[in-house]
Length: 165
Image (cartoon, rainbow, N blue to C red; front, top):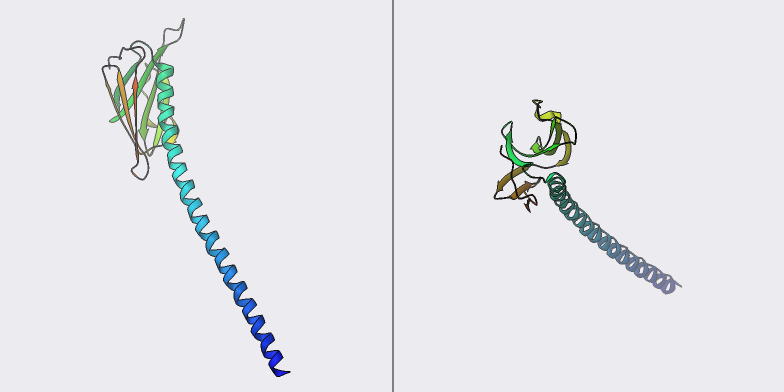
């Protein structure tokens, strides 16, 4: 009788050991998968932010691209993309300014005769830096994101004319 009980304990111990090994394998697989998923989500989030910011600037330039309407100027010491427009029948000139301030891309829409402040605009996207250049109808915007990643957008102005700052 004693040999049968001992064999029963050994069988139970073997089954429990096998179950523990199986549970540990499942747990390690789940943890590895969760880590890979987290890294993938972070990478996709950073890529989405870069594409969104670049596409936002490209869209705003395409919307405001008219003869003499696009300029790169300094706005309180920071690069500013300036888009000027006149509405039909309106004597006022309107200005849209895109600039980087306080870790964000900002957009400011105002009349040209108003002296705005940096904080008068609206935060659009998170962005650490914006370097702009405009030469021979070619606009280059270098976007710097948190973590030091950069994205460059180069646009050819359809109007072919650059505004005089």
